[in-house]
Amino acid sequence: MAAQLPVIINAAISGSHLPTASPNLPQNGQQIGEQALEVAEAGAAIVHIHARDENGIHSGAVEHFQQPIKVIKDAGSDLVINLTTSFTGSSTDDHDTRFAPLSLSPDIGSYDAGTMNFNDHVFMNRPDFLRELARRMQESAVKPEIEIFDTGQIGNAERIAAEGLISGPLYFQFVLGVKGGGPATAKQLVHMRENLPEGAVWSVAGIGRPQLDMDALGIIMGGNVRTGLEDNLYLSKGVYATNRQLVQRVADLARTLGREVATPEQARNILGIG
Image 1 (cartoon, rainbow, N blue to C red):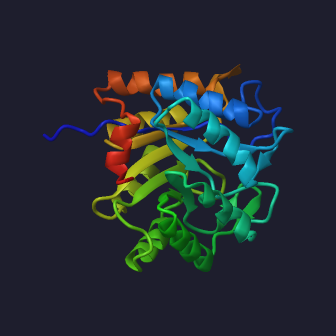
Image 2: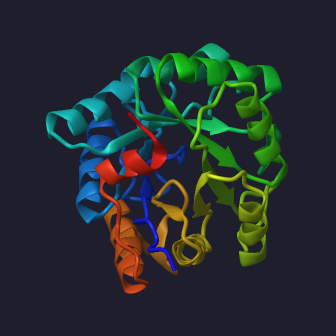
């Protein structure tokens, strides 16, 4: 039996929560950068960043992404930087705003692979937008993190990859537990993994209470995992988590289950990031 690759921990540390949702959420670019360095120490190889403005509100403005990136780079960290291309507070049809973070040359950018009902609103990702986003990621040498909320979105990404717009290895991030998407269950995760193209790299995130369950399954099944306050605010019932605690918990679990924890360099090699 071949040895498993080290598990890549992707820390989603900020998200689009209101600043009052948890006392431990980073409230501005400086704090996002500082918490990114903390999760790197705990075992994260990738940091997934949603920017915040001076009032702690979710923002798609390029200048609000620049500060956390500067904090990370100034510290000499080799963290893999993953910027979102989706923002609350602005229309998902505002394509120029969604493309703008690519100008900062992150290692990875989120690539939400289909239109869907998302909780109480419609999350628009039309085929023409997805093709253009893929083109711009190619031009900027940004690796798409293909975010999959339900099985049919895998086919959307495969069609665009077949057009030569996404290069392998394809990197899929399953996000399970959103109302309107696939449930955060073992059955759903197995089903989605079985529908991946050959050679794909995959990771899983569970939204809310199932976060740890999905991370444990991802480790056992040979995949990679996402954790952090974007997806889950609690360490246990009624106890607010910190990003560092959530990453440390998953890193410890991976080692207990016999998986090494990937370094940023190993993550770049696995994902094909130059």
